[in-house]
Amino acid sequence: MNIPRHVAIIMDGNGRWGLLKAKSRNYGHKEGINTVKNIIEGSIEKKIKYLTLYTFSTENWKRPKFEINFLFNLLSNFIDEELDNLNKRKIKIRILGNINKFPKKLKNKLNLAQKITSKNSLIHINVALNYGSRQEIKHAIKKKN
Image (cartoon, rainbow, N blue to C red; front, side, top):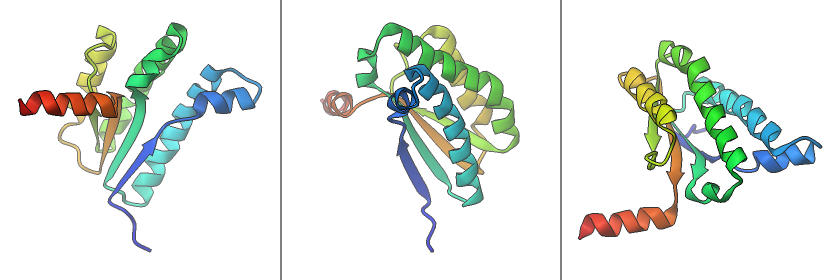
């Protein structure tokens, strides 16, 4: 069996899953973090070189503010709790998308995670944040002109 070099996953449905479990959307998002950890472990075991996680699209800004804040806090806490471990395991983190709208503290953590892990090469994890096809098309057109 051929193992792919690059796997991309759209992290969608966690909130709905939480509701189906008679819990909250935020419960589903929190459990999604455990899924991410399992995905990273499985990717390393299978020797997948690149993993892209589409986690927060431009459409996600339409969610209620408390849910957006919860998602940002989850990401922030994940970095706080896992960055040293990711770095020790030689995992490289790269942020894709435009994080300029994100809270300053979170932007700083995301940039720090990229900087600290920049020389690592066991697996490259791309985290897509504030991305969207319409945004990409507009950016490409502006760049061309």
